[in-house]
Length: 330
Image (tube, rainbow, N blue to C red):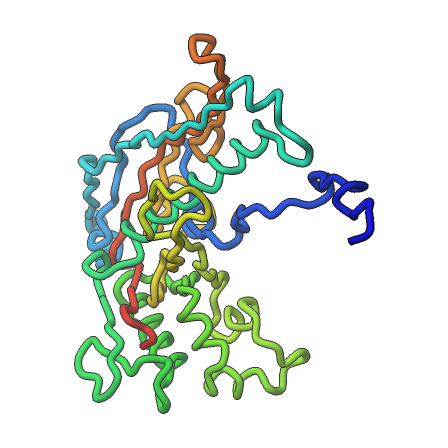
């Protein structure tokens, strides 16, 4: 072998313009986008709920000359409450590791990115458990592979299904229950994949200007303001002591469902909404979403701690304003 070899004249260095990280795109997550976020100064409090039955009942009567008008009123429930749990996680950056880190790694930046991803996953899991499941909304619809019965529909991945008919039927049902047209549709990533290729949709858009499936086009077709795709994932494999790479089993957090309902454009007085997120902004350092990332010196372990904290409560405040489609695709 000729000398010197390539290993004698070149020592591999760490590239400073490339690294492979795993920070999920924020648009994959819907927890902060579907329902209005209500900034609250205290961790817990009550809120008023006006009685829908009183407001929608027809009470006016003909008034005879010289008589009083008919009288009526409405009830207010002041018992509903929220409580904002505080979630937190930290990553310690020791001084030795920071001093010995090569470009393009940055121990402080990488810790912040890691904690931000953890916060996105935790909040999405909370959103799914609070809103994107059966037994939460007034009308659950369940997808089946054949012969749908009451409160069932033919799964949208099955030939002969009619997702737009199913969604429009529930849109009308919500209007009848509440007086509000639904304005928002949330789809699991697998549900969106089936819907985007469905003949019902393709036939409806073939004469549009672009003829390309998009959430905006689906929203316009269904007369909705928003269509969101919940495509965040998590690793469901347990951590091991085997080092890196760790076991990885990717799973969609939202699953194969769909949710249709009314989400208020913004929080306000006498403003109904299927759900609200109460963000405890009164917690020291919290932003408008109830979250904060801080650093603190830990001299006794020669480290700096990077900590992510968030305080929020996700509440269904009007179950009649939503419908969940379980098992929307096979």
